Image (cartoon, rainbow, N blue to C red; front, side, top):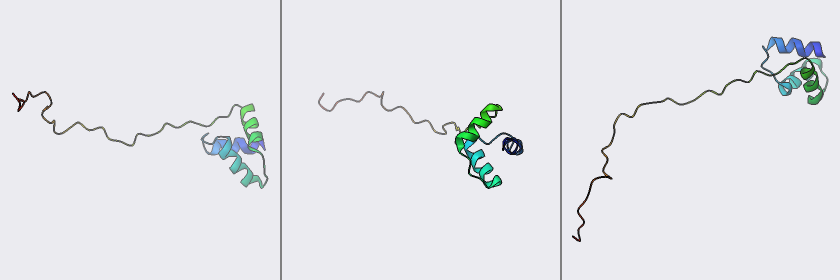
Length: 80
C-alpha cells in the first residue's frame, strides 16, 4: 500500500494530502483504508501536501475623480 501512495504522490507532484490520498488509494486498490492509517504512512516517509497560496481576486485601481472636501467649509449659521 505504501508503494501505491508513493506512486500516486509522485504522479500528482505532491499536491494531495492525506484526505485526498485516502480517497484515491481506496478507489485504486478497491479497499477501504482508514484516513488515519494513510496519514500515519505518509508521515513515516515525510510526505506532505503542497500548500498553495490563495489568489487575490481584485484589481487595485487609482481613484479617477477626487471629490472636493465640503466638510471643512465654514458655513454661516442662519441664527447669526
